[in-house]
Length: 179
Image (cartoon, rainbow, N blue to C red; front, side, top):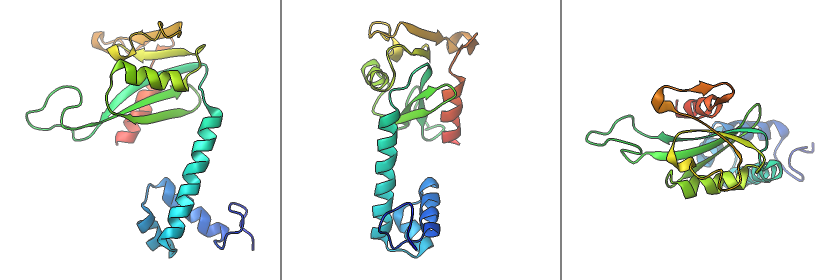
């Protein structure tokens, strides 16, 4: 029986669906190979094909247009003794861009500096988009880049939404990722 997902494959469709589930659960190739009784190299090859297809699809649907929300988040231990402030305790910084009622783009970044965040926004957001951010200084200068519709909420003054200006969608996404 021919597999409709992979041309010329000796893997059944049911086994392929099981591989996709394992990929979605973020299992390693070794763990997946043990569970599915397939060779690890076969699992590596299929995982690579899945990643390639995801990359092709995301490049085809980029850049985002419309109402976008941008925010950064820090992943890691809750508290490291003696360390305070942003990124304390060797936390991993993740930047996310969320198209309202649509898709999310997230990327691990080395820092939350303006040039890093603006480079990603410039690469993934259409210039006509309305971008909603918080008051972090890394978003200063978006108007200078040509994004005329840049709206901010100031969390420091207990402002979390002002009309349709909020970043609740991307914060919700990043919060679920941390759980």
